[in-house]
Image (cartoon, rainbow, N blue to C red; front, side, top):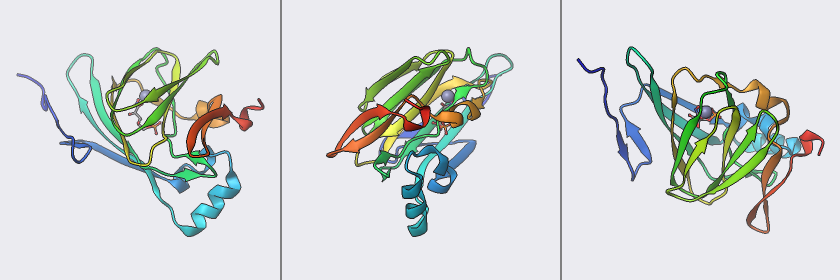
Amino acid sequence: MFPLPLSVQFDFARGSFTPFEHYSERRLSDLADLFHDQAAVRKALKRDDPLVYDWRAQPFVTSESDLTFGVTRIYPGQVGGEYFMTRGHFHVQRAMPEIYFCLQGQGMLLLESEAGAFQSVAWTPGTVSHIPPHTAHRVVNTGEAILVFAAVYHLSAGHDYQTVAKGGFAQIVVAREGKAVLVANPRRGG
Ligand code: PAN
Ligand code: ZN
């Protein structure tokens, strides 16, 4: 007897899939501490509380080693010139890697190892990125449309948000004359 479900169906037009067991969303108020310009965050939140990203996940559970498939959708937007992005995390099980697959939109994957080595990867639809073990990962939507990416990771990986929350990544992605540029993160004392 195979465990169920064996498959989910991705809908390219909707940038989503069914069925899914988990749905979560993050609004600007949930992510307020992420952005470098806190005055701009407070000002934006007086107007409204936009959806920054949502994600769906389907665990494929067997009796042995289990994978989860997820799809995240980051909406276009900026606060204080900094683009909308995921919170970003290490895996609790630091040795667990992950695959990200950019399906729609333009963006950037930020990677930072536990030893502090930083790297960014420009994303267009079709880019498949490996997130190595011991590496924090965040995705930034640098485009004017929604950015959609799929993720495959081990069910037991776990999310450690605390470590990234302390200072953020080494670099942040901001808009300069309409273009996305990486600059040193002021919160990291660089
Ligand atoms: C992804 C992320 C998802 C949301 O499934 O959990 O994109 O981003 P944050 O978890 O950083 O808010 C993943 O990397 N799982 O391991
Ligand atoms: Zn992850």
